[in-house]
Image (cartoon, rainbow, N blue to C red; front, top):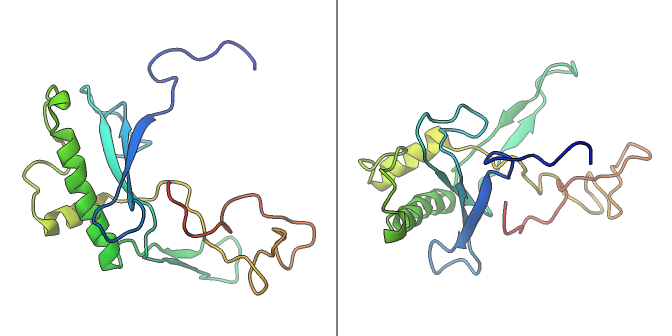
Length: 184
């Protein structure tokens, strides 16, 4: 390692704690992950708020909604169209609504009484419809999706992680991983 180790409050990972929950008795395993981040911001990678605070977020672990890329042009410099398709299923919508309700119960605990209040979506947002609209307006990926391409005999990636059609190229990411990953 070159130089000395970084020091100070921003020298550690942002998300230092989290928890897994089942939003209902239906799933066999937790279907949401809640993360707590040691600073306050509207969106990861953007400017921090001018006040002290924390960011807490809900992540659905196994969404049923599926997006799709579409080639728009034969010109390889033209980016593809990406249809995100978040919240397309009732199960996904319910997981986020119920996940936000679980998060609010955690943040209402006596140990967190020093927190001045909720910034987003705001304590006035209480109906399921309004919570879902907040999710639609602010939701994004957790930066590392998996299981985006099939693996196997008739798939893009073979059993030995070789990309079909390109000699000598092997997969080194998790795009071919099983779709039942239980954390983001």
